[in-house]
Length: 429
Image (cartoon, rainbow, N blue to C red; front, side):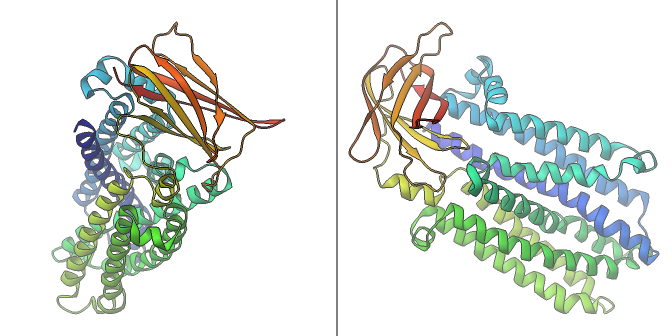
């Protein structure tokens, strides 16, 4: 029950964090690359109050991103340690996760980037001018760094590099398109009562339309790449919960492209006619609503094992309800470690080693160690034995206490190559 609540909270927090980050970056991109240049080239402009409104949106979005990011870190720490939110904060587990895990280290870096972007946004425009180039750079860094806390960031090797680059481009394209819709809607709404902004609308809409085409092409290409890595087969796409959610995301994306096509090929050329601006604003809000649902789907997908991974792991049976389990990644390989039962007493550990493409990683020998939470604890070190199905096993592990143990795997792959992995694992009392 506690794990279900944590998972639900993680989904909510992830959605809020992604939405806030996309909005902050999208407003920055729209202002710098669309609105300001269109205002300058068309001879139009915007009131100081309008510029302040955009700046306020960025600052509020950044504040929400920081707070939701902190909540994400706390919930993840509680999930890793198997403790309540209060206990993991009171016992310092959150600092361990922040300093010693990939997610925590990336979170700290993103927090610094958010603070820098917020400070630069708060500066008066005249004082900020020499540093203006850093505003979109910081916004892009804040948005793109989400790739390192997702499935792409956990994929090792050359495939991981390709997947990560694809995810970065996917995020930037989504931020430029979906995140740019709210400031575009604001511009269109103000144009009905502001003659100065009305002069800017045709050029701003035309340029955003071109940007949208680039973003759609990028999202389509990178989406295919990401689906190839995460879903792997058509059977997984239609036959797993993860795959079906990906299909929902594809359907929503298709609907967004349909609305955007109407805007691009029908309404944009009719902006001079009565009602076209209002219709364009309405359609932009429809796109934004569909994009928001996409973010909800992304939040759900991020808390689920990819269909490709689940398919491979399912070949060897599901993890028992009373077992402790951890999946460990590295650049050279990965491991699934199961301790069953995952509680005080005598247990058995099984280890499966994988290549980056989820094929079996053969080893000459595997050494398994498990260390209790106490600082002066001596690790339980055992040589694992090879099983007929390609896995490795250690019997007779005596676990005297519950808590946050550390598991380490030392696999001899060849006479000159080793794979060393470690991760926390929770043993119940």
